[in-house]
Length: 179
Length: 371
Image 1 (cartoon, helix red, strand yellow):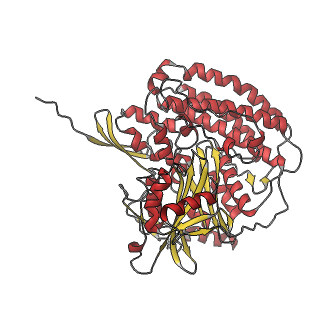
Image 2: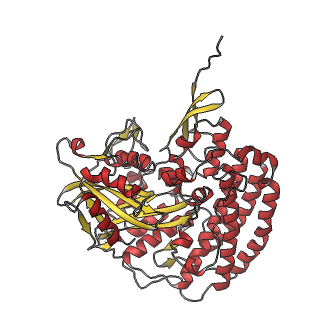
Image 3: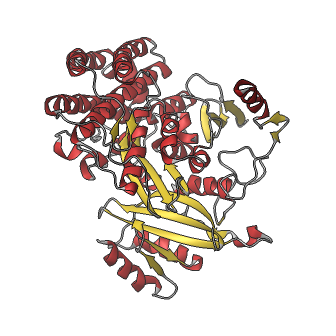
């Protein structure tokens, strides 16, 4: 099915309200849905015989700090049965106070098990919480790491467990060389 | 009196000869039988996605070499295609053929390592020395081409950085003539070896449904019986003009999706890569090897997800641009990552020695898991 056909089908499942179809920029078009509808839509996208999105190719976190401080979770879906793809996005506000109350979205790991690790990585890197995930903890970074490095306002720590992470020494040598 | 047994928690790795880089598995075992196996990854995490956001597009190319250092050309190619599509850069035909040529050559040596270490992991050390010997020849060819033997940094936006040196194609043909009969030798030596088969047939079966659920890609997916290869089904570069078969597991040993199927797929893929290479040599066009018209890279605001078929399966780059000189976000999705995520699901009930076979058969490379 073409993207427009898939979009119509999605509208017939979860209604037209609050959906935003973005196709006016370069590259791939995508659909932004409210996070409350994610779980229901995901179940249908996998189960509906016309859609049959059987693989989750990629799940990514994105952090935008332009006019609005917001996070995105992006789902790249592919159907091996019908050979078509679709991109879903969920946007989450990130207010200055108690952001972890707002950075919450339903986990889809029960629908596509591949999401389990990708969601853990998104939490690790962005601090997005996935509700209903069976084994939710950091994936790549050590458990005692502070902060989430792919956030745009992340401050690199000076040291980790007494190991210096700054480059002063190297910069000193470079300065000496350049005289 | 009933016999009581106790489970024991055991660490395998981070430094273990069979873990293909720095990986750790936390095992709960009952004697030799694994109850639960939890992979613990991140030991080789270098923050490539963060680095990508801080560098201009072209400067990230050498980092893609380190993404999967056994298949640096394929990682170069995937990243180059992504940026070319986003920035609308054309690639001259000669460059396209050179790219496919180096990518397939890299696929062969990556699979050679995979097959060799596979045999070594389950106890046959000699085949590894044979595959390394063949790989050495290709390393020499690559060195001639770009000066590097492992991390090539050879592909550029709009082409490749150097043209083929004189007589390169002849020397490549010589290698292929030498290499093709070797595959038959491997088959006699290991593939059809009784002990080797006993260790792999029916071990750690991944069903078709499991492979789909965990988004396995590449040889691991095809070994579970799914006929899907991006080179054929969504052709990029000049793969559309080349003829080759896509090997798919068909339960040769009697079981679909076991370690032995995953092993066979790689042997067959090497055969097909040889076919592709011969076609590239025959069809190699003359002309420029680099599109030099676009000196200044301009990427429009927008986003794009591009996937290519690397030796470990689908390599996806998700690029979001806001129009600046650097990417806003570059997400890298690799084959080893999804292969690792299925280990916990498949490994319960295996013997500990079979876990080693499972990891080897998935062809996991630690830097590609951790990025």
